[in-house]
Length: 418
Image (cartoon, rainbow, N blue to C red; front, side, top):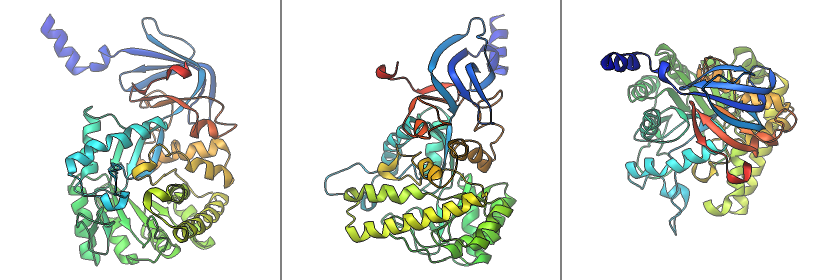
């Protein structure tokens, strides 16, 4: 009998899963509905019901002071970019100088800070030595606490890279269509979920946006990804790379400042997701002392922010599909959702802004039936916020009080929040 029970437990662990009922003042389900005085019932990793009844023998978590929203998705991070603040160092100069195992271990702080913002899933767009793959796998097996990760391995870049020093550390060299195809396949063989391609210059204090890869090279990378059942994100700080990325079939375009109306219209028509990352350069300007940036650099960053924001406003008006991405690096984790404030300033309602971090992010990942909503069958990724997110996006950006990821509480209530 005992052996039979053990066998059943192995075959059907959900039968023995703890049932948890979480009571909320309101539930914003991510699918356009709001339920008051609601109960979300969780078994194992998944949500089994959303209603008003508490099942018998369920463990109850009382969060009726708060509103529930789906766990959010940050569609652009660099989780393995860490800086230990050693005196005499700067973030970029230290990148890649620590042992890979030390880097992954220290990156747990980035993971923890990300969860504290209510982000339970990230699309991580560039690392080196497949540290992102290692981090993803450690989180998936429960050996590390962090958001669910979809990773890209090395990004594809036209210049020499992987030198273990400098800013091209997170890129893999590829020149010409055959090389692009080879290197893209290498990333997939290394365990990448996505292909990341740097389609233009521009990063941190460099706000140029000169196209690097040609249309044919971009299309080759897109074809490799899609034939393997994977997806591709193409970085372009400027308009030319973005135009060709959309034509080539990119699933998302990152940054993409100064796009003209025709390119924006094509983006809307093709369904390409726009990840504008406006707040990323606000972060660099705000943290200029950490990076050693002077006023000339800050002026360039601010000019880029203004142009990026103007492009975002036109994209919102054109109904382009937009996903929230922070492009968080180093000390930017913990500020992951500040991008939502820019979305509201650009003309979105708070509800639309929240959608960029929930259902739009889930659709971008191909996980729209598992992430981005509080509904039966979805992962139990649930965030409790103080305030009304549909009235003021600040409730999402600054009001996170409790976080569950995959049925486990990863950010408990603090004593002051109870």
